[in-house]
Amino acid sequence: SRGGSQVVVRLLGLDSHLGISLQVGQEGSAQCRYLGGVEYSCEMPAVRSVINRVLPRYTVQVHAVVEGRADWSQGSVSYTYYVGESVSSLSPCSGPAGGSTQVAVTGSGFLAGDSLTCRFGSSAADGSPSPGSLDSWTQVQGRWRSSTLVGCIAPAASGEQTIQVQLSNNGVDFVGALSY
Image (cartoon, rainbow, N blue to C red; front, side, top):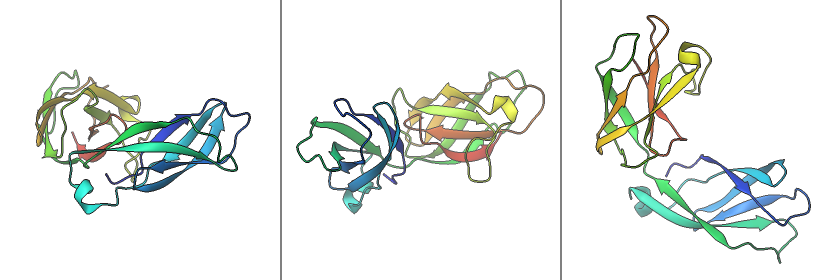
């Protein structure tokens, strides 16, 4: 619900790259930049309604708006916002370099689903992936236990090192950067 997710939109039936934006339900618009071919990258806005920000999931209809083409329309698609998850602790905080350790991630806002993902690696000061340990990041499927507990199997590492653990409800937007 905090917005900022990057989505790729494919618009068929346009002759050249034009300026586009997305109308995102009642939340406002998302400006998009042309990537090439029929693809655009758009940053989703934050949820405006206080009530909708506390729902575990909130789905809106998204419509593309093309500059200078009021007559162009291809309908809408659904986009689902999720309450922001947070990570507060790991247990255990270390394991053998060979991996396979069950790591309990505690926090809040965890949602059951196929997109629940843990990643192990190193991060830059801003939390983005940085080259280094584990060849940057290794992602593993999270096992939902409750809205406050997820299990992750630690991957193997090349020798003793400190790595970061992050979690995502949607497999795209990761939070946390706890050391393991």
